[in-house]
Figure 1 (cartoon, rainbow, N blue to C red):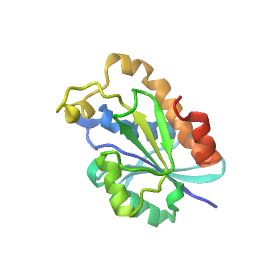
Figure 2: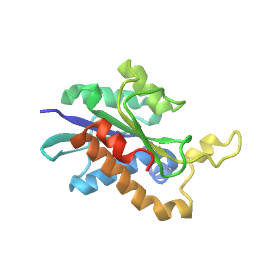
Figure 3: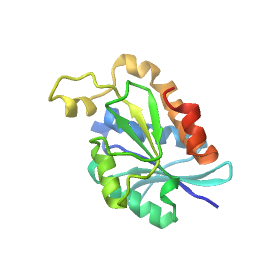
Figure 4: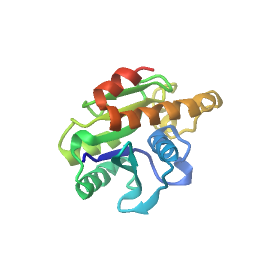
Length: 188
C-alpha cells in the first residue's frame, strides 16, 4: 500500500498565522478539515493521519521554521517509509499571481528557503510540489515584509475558494496521481 506525506510549509506562532508565507499551513489545515482529521504535536511539528480512498496520508506542519523544513520532511519520510515521489510540498510562490496554483514533479527551489532546505536534506529536486501564488505586489527590497505580511481584504474574500481548490488538488494527487492532477488543476 502506497503511503503519502503532504507537507505544508510555514512558520509557527500566532504572529505568522495569517501571513502569505504560511499558505502551506492553511492548505493542509483545509485538507485535514475535509478529511475530518485533527493535528497533534509530534516530532518536528504537528501531524494528522487519515485514509483517503483507502490510502494512508500523513499531513505535516513542520515546527522547524521555514528555513529548516528539510529535517521534518526527511524524518517523516523515513518514519512512515514514504517514497520521494509520494511526498507533496505545498508552499507560497511570489512568481505566480495571487490564488493561482502550479504543480510540478520536480524543479529548482526558485529562491524559496523552505524548498532549498528540503532539496539539501533529500539531496534531490525531484519531489512533487504545489506552489500557491501570493503575487508580487511589493517594492524593491520589500520582499520579506511582503511574504511576512497579512492578506489584503480582497485576497481574503476569495481565500476560502482557493484553499478548497488547493486542498482538492492535494487529495487528487493522492488518488489520481500527479499527471492527472496537474492536467485538472494547474493554472486554474
